[in-house]
Image (tube, rainbow, N blue to C red):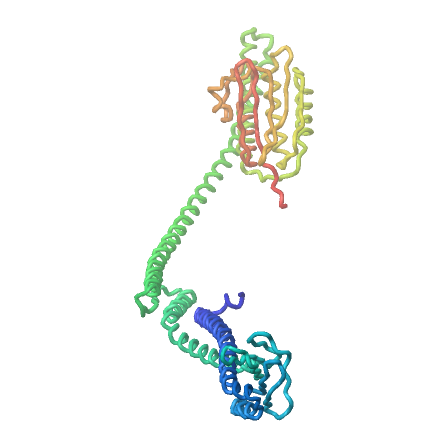
Length: 489
């Protein structure tokens, strides 16, 4: 069947026609052979029965007048029947009256049956027929004849095989010529399809020679080629348009990149100016305010001393703002150095440092934290900023508590820092992670408003998310997520 599937349509049709014709001829020949053998048996028995009846009529007077010579003369006429090998006439008492043998040898018959009949013994047929005269059985005729059924069958099968071969050859020849009307258009379609695949030429068409189903197939194939050619033209035009668009986009990207590089250089220049030009006046303000307090402390009243302290504090605060702003601007240019981090150890270390330096010492609860792959220095800053906020905003509680935990999702790990402090109004959640955005006054909770903006930018660079939940007076929870490291299974 595998080889049949690989053959051509023409070969398959010839094979089907040949097998069908051979099967039909075989069934027909077998049926005819069976019928012929049956007919041969019946005709043989009928001929011998008629011959026995003739001999019985002729031999009846000889039996009545006990004239065996006359009976032998009648039997001698069987020489003309070459298929009869022997015959005998028996008297009514069963004694052989006369006999005949084609080869001159003595002939013997088995015991006479009580009724007329026959039986086959090997390749011989034995037939017995009663001789009746005036309603009285006067004797019996026995005939022995050749019954070459095998030879007859062999001859018949030979003739039948010759007829089948000739018929099969004729059927294949006729089918070979007729199938061209079917396979010709299909072969033409196959040839055109092969050329289209090799040359990518959709202008080729298959010739139509019939108006039957094959003709409809040719029309459908040519229509498909026409549609493919039309779509190919559209696709080629689209590719050309896309190429031009890509070239234009590349030019735009190059121009925008140049603009961005220029903007970055301007930002670096601005950062340098802030770092150097603004720091010098701040140092002068802070220094002279300090000198006034030291040199003229006795001549200045309490109100003047308070105002000088405000000037020094605000100058220091301005310096801190400049430092945070520079750190925020440099964050985007720093290359990430991912490493496997023990988040629980990192959170504990950051809390111990903050708890040691500050005046408020809240209770810390650190749950099981899954490891993360991130930049160590930047994640240290994330933990430091979030824990610092938690300590700061829970500092006015009688029993401040800071809780650190994590939730493991399918594609990311979510870490959170929760406190029982001041909380915030959820209506202003969108302002939490903006630069210099504050939801509490400076007098209530000091700070620059840059820490959470730094957290948001660091986590975003790592492909994660940052969000917060809280209610006024009920504390706040800050979440950040980091993608899980992809494994090659």
